[in-house]
Image 1 (cartoon, one colour):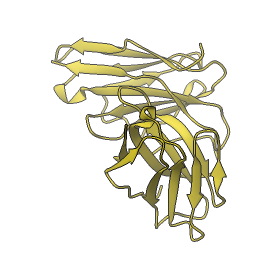
Image 2 (image 1 turned 90 degrees about the vertical axis):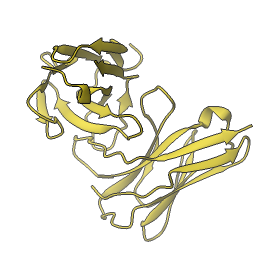
Image 3 (image 1 turned 180 degrees about the vertical axis):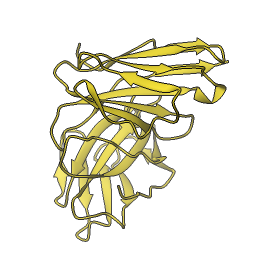
Length: 112
Length: 114
């Protein structure tokens, strides 16, 4: 699986949009971009994933550049409970193997 | 249950002892995964089960580590002759068997070897 690069930490004001970047310049055509987050002392939680089109769900939006070499996770109205480590992961599509290769992620701190 | 359940939540053991960590996946999920997370690091893959069989055990660090899933549901991660370097949070996840479904993680077992 391709590697990803994320900033180690970011801050965001409560109520504002949090935009978390991820670089995956070596991504292959059959690799999806996944985002998970991990709140302190909990297991990782799935947020969203996409291949090449922008995706939105009840938690967040995922914007993938046209060349697919980078993406941005957007939390539209961050709350204090969104403080967590956010992981950007690329993974080969298809099959039943769900091996995830986590990096160190971005620690997002939402401030009141 | 509603989610992935791991027991115990915390385990302290002495160096050289044997430990077992249990994972109850979400009902109906055929895929099960074990990960290990050291302080300040992201989770690292250990082993993946599809049903009862270990489809990928490439992440197990050495032969002191072993995992089973005899009936295709509950899984046990077994560590023999524990070392202080085994101290970490051990995470279990499960997912349905299809290409890109999400994995649901448990809260983890914090293992401390003293």
